[in-house]
Image 1 (cartoon, helix red, strand yellow):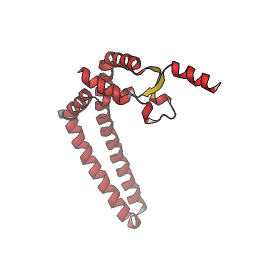
Image 2 (cartoon, helix red, strand yellow):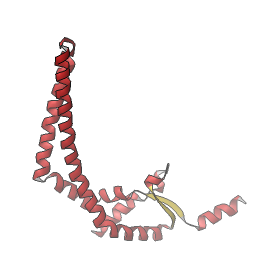
Image 3 (cartoon, helix red, strand yellow):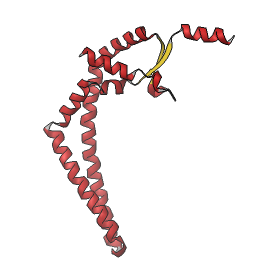
Image 4 (cartoon, helix red, strand yellow):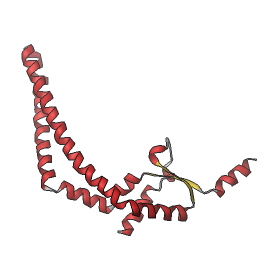
Length: 159
C-alpha cells in the first residue's frame, strides 16, 4: 500500500516553494533601481539628515547615561523629552528613506509581474512541479524545495 501511495504522489509532480518578492528584488534590474533611488539627490539629503540625527541621538543617550545620576529630576525629565523628540525625528526620516525604497520596489514588482508569470509557467513545466506554494505560506521547507534563485536567474536572462 505504501508503494502505491508514493507512486501516486510522484505521478503528480514535485512540490516547490518560491518567494516572488525576493526573486524580483534580487534581480540585476532591481538592484540597479534601488541604487538609482539611493543615488537620487532627495534620498541622499534624507540619508545625510538621518546620519546627523542618529549621531546626535547617540550622543544624547551617552551623555544622559553618564550624567543621569547627578541630574535633578527636572533635568532628567528635560533630557528624556529631548531624547524622545530626537527619536521621533529619526523615525520620521527613516520612514521617508524606507518609503522611497519601497515605492521603487512596488513599481518593480508590478512592472515585472507578467515576466514572473511567464518564468513560473516555464519552470513549472520544465521542473515537473505539481504544487507551487508561496514561501510565506509554508512553515518549513528545506532549501532544495525553493525555486526562488531559479526565478531570479531566469528573470536576469530575460532582460
